[in-house]
Amino acid sequence: MVQYFDNCATTRVDDDVLQIINKYQSELYFNPSSLNKYSLEVAKGISDARSTVARALGASSPMEIVFVSGGTEADNLALLSTSKRKNCNVVVGGVEHSAVYNTALRLKNSGVEVRFCPATRDGHTLAEDVAALVDENTSLVAVMHVNNETGAVNDIKAIVSAVKSVNRNTLVFSDGVQAVGKIDVNVTGLGVDMYSVSGHKIHASKGTGCLYVKRHVNLNPLINGGGQESNLRSGTEYVAGIVSFACALEKAVAGVAEHTKQFEKYKQIIAEKLQEIPMCKVNCVENVSPAIMSIAFAKIKSEVLMHMLEGDDVVVGMGSACSSKNKHSRILSAISLEKDYLEGVIRVSFSKYNTEDEVRNLADKLVKNVALLRQTMGVKF
Image (cartoon, rainbow, N blue to C red; front, side):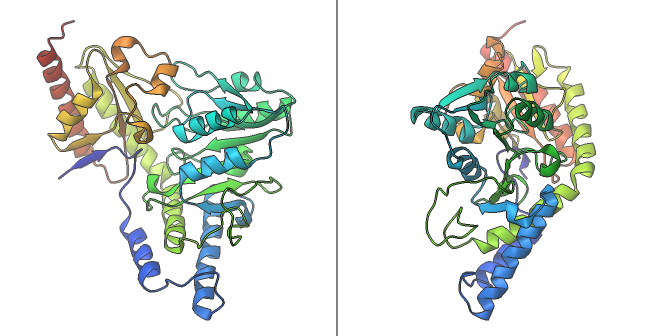
């Protein structure tokens, strides 16, 4: 049986989430924009889901929730749909997910000045560094809540406060895809203007997610049509996905405290075993998500190690699955990881379905396979 530790890439869908999807696909399949009584029942399902998501994220109103197809669309909507004044600039974290980073490059190519904020050596983006790039012409700041490769948790509340102290009109957006369901999140408390969430990272289906948009923030739609989602995301709603996403999100948020304790224990088990491996380091150990562990091994190639672990039916990640075709991780390069370690990074990410026995097996297999790989390559220390 496969032991899966790549939950940052995607997660197994919960059984009760699948039941909701099946129900709305086979029984309550009606178009929520139609006026028959069955469609009105389906429309109510969307409304109830919006309220559930708003409560789970700490939004002040259900109307602050815009349902989209996932984190990438939410990120694009946040960056591309905000009003850009002539001669404005945008500040973006230097280690953002490719959905934000590449969209920022698109803005740059269209003539918007984009200022990338450098990260610390463990992948954090600091409030003072962000604020130093903000001026009277800054229309938007985008900094992720949890880094998808290192697990570094940014102090978004402090970043919002620092940005607004320089320019109160600057909008602040945070990619919360790897944060929600892993750490405590309250969007109102954070003070953000926009915040993105993806369903398939929290045991919902792929193709689901939302963008939190604070009241009075004006966005222009990327998709035009019938005016669904407050005219921000036209098209017939994926009702099964929306309702099941709300269920998964509610469960994920409720389980944060329990799973944090569980995941911290898992990390300790692996960390103790890693002491048997020379030239090995954990990339981020402070202010880090309990669900993510980025481990670097000197003088090996992570892709080879990943496939060796697959031979033991153990699955880990190498970084962002959305940019896996790149030879080197942009994020690991940005945090100045030493050359000997750069090609030997794996990402272990946990879910509630992982067990302690699986984690101990993973730790044992890491020791065995790293030693075997180095021996095969003739690596000596």
